[in-house]
Structures are given as C-alpha cells and as structure tokens.
Image 1 (tube, rainbow, N blue to C red):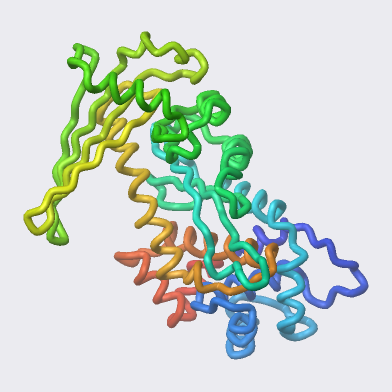
Image 2: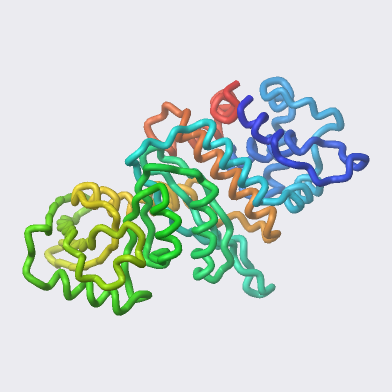
Length: 365
C-alpha cells in the first residue's frame, strides 16, 4: 500500500483526544474520490459513502469510527500544512523515481482558476511545477501568490529542495534571473527564454544574430505537419559570446540561442522569433530542450484541466485547495507511472469506472 505509507508520514497537528479518524485514512479516502473524478469535498464524501465496503475490503481501511464526515474531511484538508505535505510528496518521488542525467525538467506556473472568488477578494491559487519530460511526471510543486513575480523566489526554493543533478532545466522568461541561474548551474544545465524583462540584453542578442554567422554558430531545422498546419523551426546556437560584458554574472553561460518558427495554415504564414540563454553547447540538445518546454502545456497543464478538472475545483480555503492539488498530481503521477493503457485519458477513465484498476494504480492492491 504505497500511498498509505506515504500518507502515514504526514504530520497530524490535531489534538489526540479529539481524533476519531487517522489523517492517513482520510487522505486515502480523498485520493480515491479524486481519482474517481470527484472535484469537491462533498463529492469525495459521497464517493466514500457509496464505496465504503470497497474501501474496507479492498483498500483495507479500518475506519473504526465509520466514515469521516464532510466537516471532518474539510477541516483536515484545511489544517494540513501544504508545505509539509509537499515535502513528503517530493521525498516519495525521490524514493520511487530515478531522474536520468541529461534529461529535461521544466519549471512552469499554473493558476487554478476555480480556487479564487473575485467578489470575496480571494485570488486563485498559483502553483509552480517542476515536470520531468522523460518520466512524464510532476516531481515537485510550490505555491506562489497571484502576483507572478513571486515565482522567482519560489523557483529558487524549489530547485534547492528537489536535489536533482545532471539534468537540463528549462523555464520561461520570467525565471531568467541571475540568482535562479546560480541555483540551477550549481548541479545542472539550463535553457531559459530571454524577453523584455532584460531589454538591453535581449537587444544585444538580437543584434548578435543579425550579424554574419561565425564558425561557432550551429543550426538545426525541424518540420512538423498535422492538424491542417505545417510548422518549420530553425534552431540556432552560438557559443561565440566572449563579447558579452555581463557573461560572468550569468553562471556557466555558454551560448545564446534563437528559434525561428514559421507556421503555415490555410495558405497564410506566421513567423515568430524567440531568444534564449543556455549553458548547453549542442544545438540538438538545445532544440530538444526548447521543444520539451513548449510541450508542458499539453502534457501537464491541459491534462490537469481537462482530465483532472483542476480549474473546476471550487474549494476556496487556501490550504485545502493546495492539498487537493497535490493529491490530484499524485493521482496523475500514479497513472502515468503504472497504467498500461495507451493514453492518460484511458487510465483516468478506468480509475472512474473500474474499482480493481483504481486500487491497483493507487495502492498496488
């Protein structure tokens, strides 16, 4: 019972004499409900009521005082410290998975729209994810405020606690910061988008790629065709950057990159150019990293919204919303890691309708 052991590591801050239900069993009930498609605490409690015998006989829950009530589940999710829960989640990932050296890890933020209420002055929850492309799982997340600038110190903390080594970390322009580069470059490589938050640097890099191409400049071109469109991408990497005066301030900076995308749809072509800073020197490695980061929208964020109803979870309590988000990502990871279904959506659907599949995926029963 892998997840049962995981939840037993979560600290319980409740007063012992008031406790009728263990925090581990409550979280197991919540995870079962979430995996079955429930998006509210009420729905999770109703799932438990309908599946109580299954929870006892198959999952092995003792439930000596019966099922936890709606109020008990809500209260426990609200008092459970998400930071402590998150640290348990990260330790579990470290024990379960070996992130390959040279693989790609993306840092990217996602807002849970349903967790906010404008009329009440409650901002929606914003989470910064660390996502392993090779393994296809979330390896960590931390909460930021609605102001996206707060992703910067959160990213520094997340990189530090993940303890990953020998990977290539990708991120968008918001996280293209000297202090973040310093944290990453201690043990890893990086590919970071460069935009207007560093206007002078961006202009210098633009001018650099307009100059004649020296022998240090390498190019890699890819073509994609589908969904009524043709896309050609030209990846250019240049290691001749000794001219850049601030080079020493960006730890292990080895090259500047440029990606030119040309998309043709219905006879019309759209062209976009993006710039990057990186510690890698191989253009194909650079191209794969850039493409991997773009894919996080489809591989993670789209799946969380469409398959796991991330944006439709309207729990407003900050702690409860974040703890439910962590549980949704645990379910996402378990399906990606253990399901033999052809797609994630098929695995998620099987969790909804097949009690045996759900028990096997969540608890290896």
